[in-house]
Length: 138
Image (cartoon, rainbow, N blue to C red):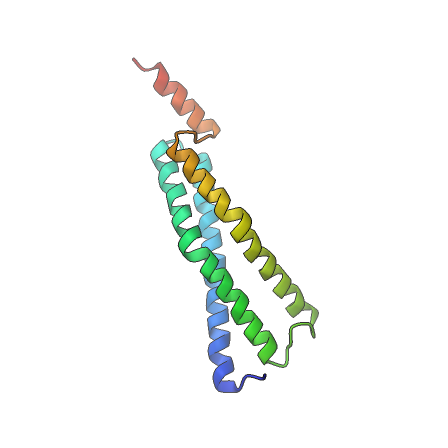
């Protein structure tokens, strides 16, 4: 099945927008993760991890799947093909691998971090010092 020009352009726009949004969301999750790991207050850690859960559960997987599906549509519906050029083939496998990693590693990791924070088991050098200082207060 070959896509005509009227179908190819919207497919390309969807693919580029979904890929850019996925990359931006991933960078946002990285910033939240760094914030949670280095924050000096439990409130900041709690907020960062809860935001990470929201983004990972509601946005990350749908964007990853949209990127994968729109890339497949473009690869199979255009002369580029899926295995005709090495860069398309490589990009497909990288996208598939990161989508699977998102589902099986990132989301469970974020859920475990939320559970740890909710149970009061948040860790990190600054948080240990903060707890130590708080426990010394009369």
